[in-house]
Structure formats: C-alpha cells, structure tokens
Image (cartoon, rainbow, N blue to C red; front, side, top):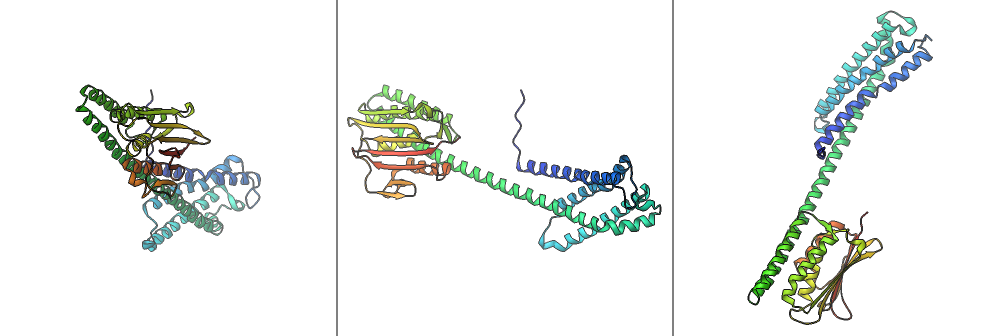
Length: 381
C-alpha cells in the first residue's frame, strides 16, 4: 500500500516554481535556434549561401543555446541580489557589469562560430567576422540580457506574491479553525455542566435512575469526542446527540415532555456544524418550558427547501419576552441573541464564520404560543 504524499508546503511550492523556471529558461532557446537553422538551410546567409541542416543546427544551436547557460547565471543573480530601492545603485552597477561580460562573451563566440562555419560571404578572417558580429549582434545581446532579467524578476515577484497570498490564506484558515474550536470547547463544558446538574438533582430522589442518566451522559461525551476537531458532521450524527440529550433532559422535565424529531431522508448525510441542534433544543427547554409541567412539547424538523437545508425547532412554551427586533440577518429577542445565553451566542458566531452571509437565522413567537427557531443553511455541492 502506497503511503499518501504529504501536502506541499509554501517553501516546497516556491522551490518547485524555481526549478520549473530554470528548466524553461534553459529550454526556450531551442525555438530561435531551430528557426535560425531552418533559415540558413532553406534561405541561406547574407551572401545567399545555403547550408545542410546538420551544419545549420550545430552553428545556430550553439549560438542560441549559450543563452541557456547565461540565463542560469542571471537567475542566480536574481535569487542572490534582491531588487531593493534602497540599494538601487549597487544592483544597477552589478547588472551593468554582468551585461558587459555576457554580451562581450557572446559576441566573441558568435564571431568565432561565423568564422568557423564560413558566414558573411565566406569570409575567413576572424577580425572581420568579429567586426560584423559587433555591428549586427551587440545590441541584440544587450536587449536579450535585460529581457531575461525582467522576465526572471517577473517570475520572482509572482512567486513571492503567491507565497504571501497562500501564507495569508493559511493563517486565516488556522485562525478560523482556532476560533471555531474555541467556541465549540466553550459550548461543550456548558452543555456538560447542565447535564451533570440534572444528575445531581436526581441523586437525591432516585439513585438507580441517576446511574442510568450518568451512563447516558457518558454516551453523550463519547459522541462529542467522536466529533472533536470537526467543525462539520453528518445530520444523522447530530440527531444521535440530540436524542441522547433529550433522554437526559426528561430526568428534569419529567415524562410530560414530548419531543418529536423528524428528518427528511434526503438530508441525513448532509454536513452541518457540530453541536448545532443541541443548543437550540436546550434554549427551548430553558427559556420556553418549565420542569414538571404537563403537555410540554418540542418539535425538531430537518428537510430541504430548494437549495437550502431547513432546520426548525419549535416549542409550546411561553415564547420570547419583549419585542422582536431586526439585527442583520437575525430576528432576535431584545436586547440581542447574546442575552439568550452561551448556546445561541455561539451558534450565531459559528454560523457566521462557516457560512458568511449565506445562511439565515430567525426566531419568532408562534401565534399558538411558544417559540420557533428557523435556520437555513446552503447545501454545498
């Protein structure tokens, strides 16, 4: 079994781009070398002399491919000598000196090749070939040097931009994950303390039932740990957690609590934020219902609404206190959602971090009494 490759780091991507750049700068000269060879083979030189393809390729290939070597020197200078406005004159002096060396070496090489292969009207004098090379090629060599230098810096700036962009993206993602996990860890102890308080109250009345409730709490913790570190879990896993929580809640609210959970089969495998439903159910119990009263009901529904997952939690309790006010995409009780406790505060924060403005959250009083919480999440993919 082949082990999976580790993900590329920012440094790895930078090194890979550098290697690719060097290969391209070394190989690109094959194109002008081939075109020049074809010209000498089919059109001929300035005197009209034609050359066989082998000679033309060797001649022009050598003249052009030497730039493949010089381009590696230029890339090394770009890597080691940074373009800094504060040290512009030393940088400019270095490349002017490099231009003089490279262009002089290339002109001497071109003159030697022309003399060797008999160019310029079959003139055999190296001095004459050198003079012609200076007149015909020196300016082109200078332009080529600075064109390569400019292209190299363009690639370098692109590489640096990509590195900074990816580093910023990774930092933002790490920050978001840290904030989400902090919110989730804040929610879990709050949830656990409430469950243990129910067990503590039961210990004075029914030890055996308290033991069974502790077992349910342990199961609940197991499910919570299973989703630890995961910001999103399947709907069915979240329903398991809510059902266990309701079993524990019945210890405090009694058998008069009627809880109904209905889930559309088409959404059971969709991913939703972990611990999303439990705070909504807990809020309905804490702010809407009263322990020991009869005919108290909570209804939880999950289904599709076009391209959204619709989550509804309703209770038949006393409803929200105060007027309803609009706050962004929220309709909340005065003074704000924050006033309703840690659970709903964290729910709002986590939804905003995970979905931005692509979700809806609404709280309202039912005409028949009680409160309705409705959340709509985008169905991804």
